[in-house]
Length: 355
Image 1 (cartoon, rainbow, N blue to C red):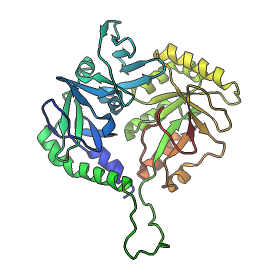
Image 2: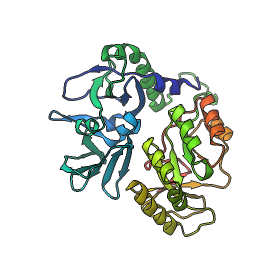
Image 3: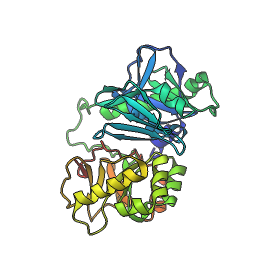
Image 4: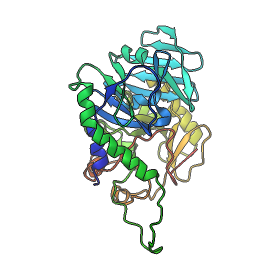
């Protein structure tokens, strides 16, 4: 039971192709990479056709097809798709795209629900990928990225995946449906215990920012957020690039004892710009730090929960900041089948994050 959702996400496969046109409405949109489906999005982020061109939200690249990392900076109006060897940088205001050789071309970028959408074929072909828009029998749109190493055709995908997709949809409906009282039910009857997996947003800082942590996350196929200070960024440039290349989010933090938070965050952002040519709006600060304008600030209190305490709390999503013993923490989360969505700039966790 505890490992059901993780198992479903690792086993999902996708679906039969459709011709260009309106995509069937569904509560979820799945994103496939070769023979698996590592993530899904809400229907508000579904790809759509504009004429013959398929437009996708930048969030689909959080599935990291072909190792592509994505960085979106709303404040600067920039979007970057990045691997070790190749890069595409979109200027959302100018409507241009620049590659790793500094070639600049015009591109149409569309905003829907505040999210930038880009033409997918042009983007993925630069990285040696193809993209197909597929649909399950239950009406779920599925965007599938392939690099030629896939083993299953679309017809086989849909036969293997439909049952699992249906389970995901059923879980979503159960989560959203109001709890209607049953006839004759005792009003004092206790609510059944929540036995589902804990939802844990992972953040790494301090000595937990390491190659060992990266390797463990890669093995687990989990994406997290790493918060680095100016000193860490400048002293571990290759590690910072590797974190970015593997698809993890990079945020900013300050050294212990620092109280000039805004100055320290700006210095860290300048350092990040030198190393990755982008900046971050995510910040991890002590619980007693003030809110910082323009940053999404995640507060870390001195009495932060241990991994075991987090796993026992099934009522709400939680932020777990790991500063050491990352291997032990990740193994415990894996053993308990915790659901570990990636911490993003837009993530809101009650009692933890603020704007």
